[in-house]
Image (cartoon, rainbow, N blue to C red; front, top):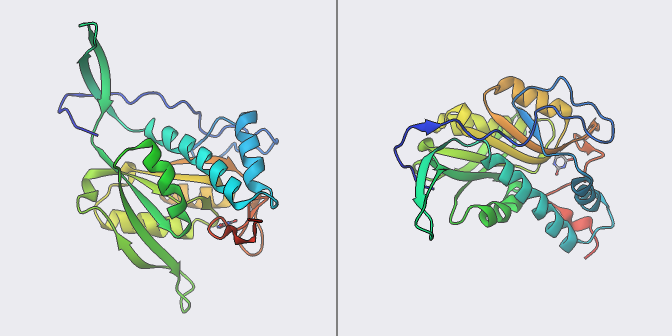
Length: 243
Ligand code: URA
């Protein structure tokens, strides 16, 4: 992505409305206005039905979750600012359009977030990708940073933060804390996930109201083991799935 130096024009209107109603009747009203869901179409629900099915093969799980990830990344890009840009078409005419402003990078929260990297690369060619590993500290029981590697100029980039499941929000909050400690402003981070719990969304967006969350689906809640219900089990370890 290149910066033209022209005056920024308002970003394109996101194709989504925040706080949409999910088709299974679960109301998402009352969620923060920074939260956006994908249009809850029958097509999208069919994709989710496949990846939620415990009998779906690993290959199909990867293929169909990748399709959802691409939709999420495209939607995330809708929230980036653009600048005016004119080009000459092969007919010799001028087309007054827009181009992306600034540079982006992805940051995946290890390990499950790595599964979203391919989908991001399919949509954004040559995108830089950082990584962050957060695990629970066995003494304090709090999320702790174990490893991070970011593009050296990350503070100047828009960051697409990748983690497939937003459960309690603990890891995502810690990841954003680390990004902000590395100079990335809150409003330059877009958090992309496939499934959110309402509890996680409220906690996360309450802490970072200026950070946009793009989620594919908002589920019912969390069970006693902090798994999302109905969810899809452990996204990072679909080993229980048939080959
Ligand atoms: N992470 C997962 O992979 N699944 C959940 O349900 C919650 C967190």
